[in-house]
Length: 121
Image 1 (cartoon, rainbow, N blue to C red):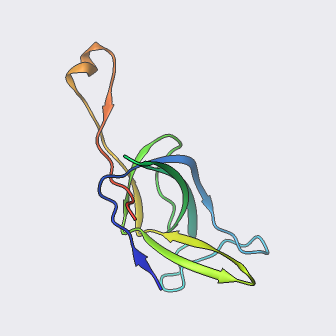
Image 2: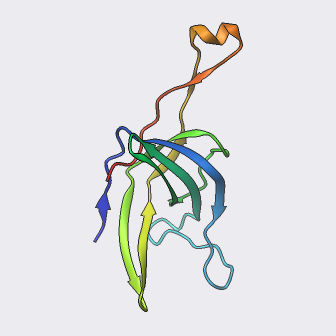
């Protein structure tokens, strides 16, 4: 079963840059439908109730950097259980940088970033 998550009201920040998603033999995994190489990006998802670190898989490497505010497009959670171990795998169609916007304070030497969207589950 896959569950699409609401991401409104949650900010995502990259806590670890995208890494290739490898199998047990060290070969990079590919999307079964498109053949595009898979990458995993570690994100901090923050809302009014707190924060949580999640690893999100995407087909293709997101062009994002550590500590960057990002938007997660069509975030899906898939519960799994293998040999008594279990968890939740997160997958997204895309992870994109939130554009940096100038504010009146920017003229005084500071900059602000736009609001991101995130996970609410």
